[in-house]
Image (cartoon, rainbow, N blue to C red; front, side, top):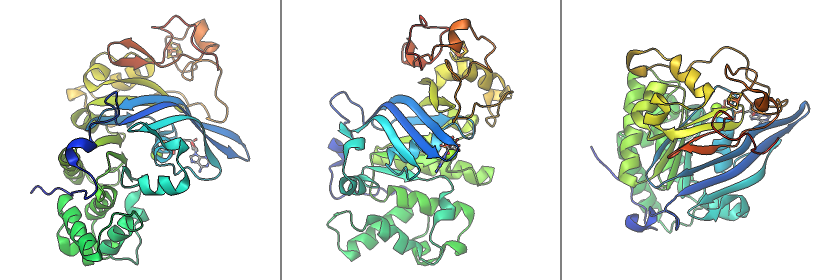
Length: 345
Ligand SMILES: Nc1ncnc2c1ncn2[C@@H]1O[C@H](COP(=O)(O)OP(=O)(O)O)[C@@H](O)[C@H]1O
Ligand code: SF4
Ligand SMILES: [Mg+2]
């Protein structure tokens, strides 16, 4: 079945062209910090990457490395005690960090949508699925009547392969996979240009995981949206995404095509990740590697990975390597490839 959710406000052909350089999203030097009683948590540090219209980017990293923080920052949903402390997030050339609350509220969901981590637990237990979908659309100045919105609810449910009758149901009447599909329907009902899916399948069994990923992939293709998929399963990533971004302790340490990242990983952390995967087709679940991730409150000087890195050099202990393009379209933050003169922390 193939059902597209149409956006009444935009012409599909023009909406996905990206900015003048052909990007739908450009994140530049993003810093996000949480101000806790125990100190400042440096959760995202100078994070930079681009996304092309329709592209699928995978974001992997150990738990606590700052992936959800990045997702929430892109939605401008970092709340107290957190703050976007610096950088830019250009969505079709508009810097989201500069938008007023009202403009951002209109942008959220309609231009950039998210399936948050643990989404299915955040469904309202006392509200029918239909009303939760309508809630997502209301106050977005879509100019739709109630009947039109209900029509879109049916389209969105069909798009995620749910029977339209699911609209009448309450979350407790749905299986885990159905709940996750309902959450995806909420995220896509206004056909955003960028969809962020934060570990959308982690609570599901393997078969349901694949089905849900196939649904996300199909919808994303039909809508022409770009996707940022956050996850742990490297096998799923290898099958689903075009490019892989690897996060470590709040920093993006590698960014490249899936092919390059799997066959020629540049950063020692990525190299260790890839070599820790079972050999059979390099499938398997992302596992932690030996050692302890630095506390984001108390980051070491120099490279964030230096106390775990088998290739550590003197320069690594004092200078923080910038994310640089060391191979065509393949970036890494590592002194092994640079001149060691990048910015000090
Ligand atoms: N609301 C918050 N208040 C304080 N610290 C937070 C908050 N949310 C996240 N953090 C901290 O930010 C860091 C990154 O967390 P997160 O972005 O959730 O990582 P991931 O999604 O990769 O597991 C962690 O050290 C976490 O403890
Ligand atoms: S900069 Fe140095 S410590 Fe960091 S990953 Fe590269 S070689 Fe290892
Ligand atoms: Mg997370």
